[in-house]
Image: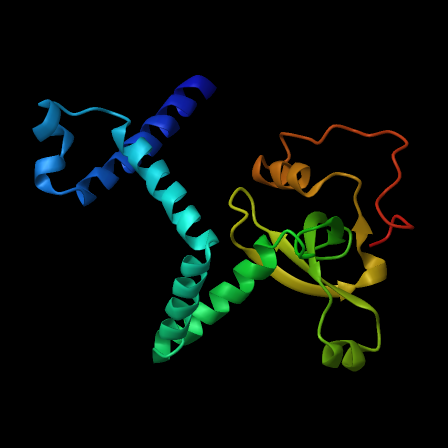
Length: 197
């Protein structure tokens, strides 16, 4: 079963990437040049486009083009709000120096006595901390088996237990619905000074 699913996913990826060949002019299509369809040629073309785009963006001219593109998008009314929000979230989450999704936590949700895995996303705004008069932590509780949807919660810091497992291990645990348990690390101290987040 795993082999069949793996082959199916690979075939789906290759056939999807082969659609990039439609970007080529009709006279440069593989069917015209070689007289037959060549599976996987789209993968090579896609990787080549990604590589060239990366080279372009990394130099001075590319950076100027990216800045110009962002200025252009910031002037379009509806697009501006969507693009800036998505960019801010992606820059925060995907940044190697960011703190989003850096810790796996154990929290009680949806009620006391029921525990689930959550990921620390930061600290609540100062106004929220002043309103509740407690030290709080912002967490994301993913749904299973699709972790792209979930719940954003702000909970007291002393009610979140920091786990020794890595974020990747915790994510696999959530996606597999608890089937793929992380490897136990006996005696390994939890990150930080205490077992609490």
